[in-house]
Length: 315
Image 1 (cartoon, rainbow, N blue to C red):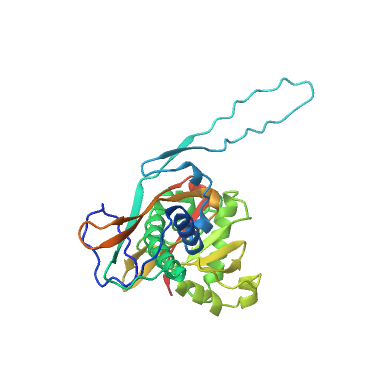
Image 2 (tube, helix red, strand yellow):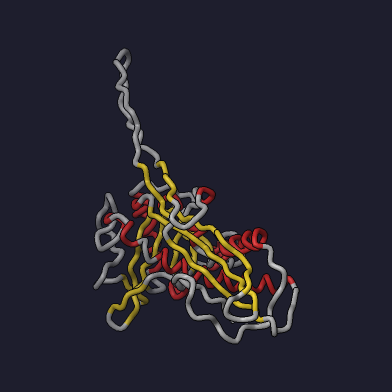
């Protein structure tokens, strides 16, 4: 039975038909396993930086992030006096303002089992449900943070003529044109001087299918022969590491669903998450033991020029 992940305060209706799983739970060790498996499953760990994760402890924490200043470069001539500049940068705050939990009961009348593999199964399911909930929520927040030059019908800071689609006029992707569109996304980031190393692109599975049907060979897509991981990695194209996800935001365009796909660099997005509580307590409503966990997280677009957006339908 899938573990239910809730975003409402504790106290809702309990689950039924609880399977007979039990065992000895050590919160500190279990919490570590859970967060490790969460990162193996989520695309966010691949596309965002998690530099500030160790600084959060509880829901409501605020992490102050110092951004890099822009250094002024000036011409120099012999014997000229030097102009002194004092670099300054904005202070960005990352607020841990989201929390999800799971709360499962182990009835005493059920058969008791202590097989550690059962705990691994619980962790796998809990992390999968957390992934769906958190990935969906975070990916839905990216659009407002993308600068106008990196999306829409006239994208490109310098060129200004790259069509990445917009509401009412999505790009129609086909197997013959999908690679050109990926190159266009790379051009948009190039014109913003975004580093080439570490670039990522998140696409829906149908778009990944179009790529595989295109003129690009499978070997060129993967590049390294590494099999697809649980976080959806499918290979590299034009300096992008591609990730497939069913959790991208969508909108209805006519008779089709249009998808907001995102490309960028980890510098543009920060994400922090912690399992802050994991405990077993006796249930007050039934003869059983409750296993419950609380995961808090926060995310923020740190630099909108480091993320590009494609709004597209299947052509």
